[in-house]
Image 1 (cartoon, rainbow, N blue to C red):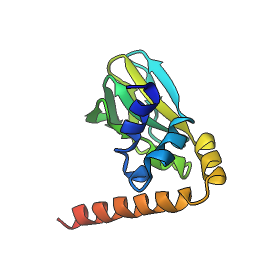
Image 2: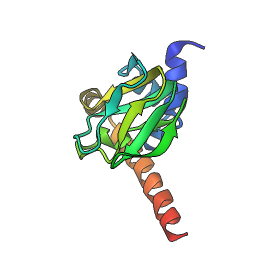
Image 3: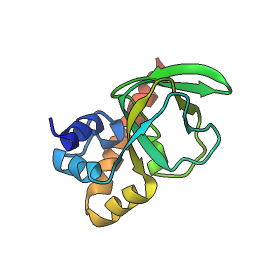
Image 4: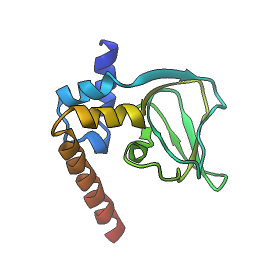
Length: 141
């Protein structure tokens, strides 16, 4: 499978992009950077402003809050999607437990996409609304 198609496959699983077409996801995939990191590298730090979104292609990452491990993420998982929309502080730290390959999308590249493609923002709002509905449903249970 060509690399770009592989990125699109992963992006399609991200709730923020759930209302986007394959063509839309292709536009996003053109703006991502493929990054390889060694085990032990800190990818994001709790409390720091967010400005990048990550999708894990290979490897595992440790998620911690207040120094305590709360999750392990692996291939297909993602984090930092809301950092594309604002620079709020990260709510967790994420570090590579193993060597990793990641797809990274920066806030600046994402903002350029919003400016260049009419209607893209509306699709993202639909994805956000779906995510909020699901979170609301979980909080009631």
